[in-house]
Image (cartoon, rainbow, N blue to C red; front, side, top):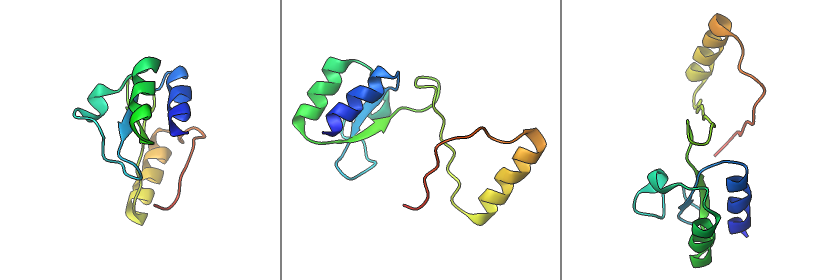
Length: 96
């Protein structure tokens, strides 16, 4: 099932790699460096097991992640927004 989601993300231009089930740890030798949008390779990976989906962030996928873990970090982020401008609307996830 996650393989179909991985393929859908790749079709949207996100570079995908497998992570160990219920983990953020890459399941392949080179981690994000092996990320691809190749549907054949992605299908091959997910035929092996129901891996978690890793996305190579940054220039490849045009996706950036900002991890704000503490109250101090949140306050620093707000200062940066005041100085440079607010971040655009984005997906947020709270909790672990």
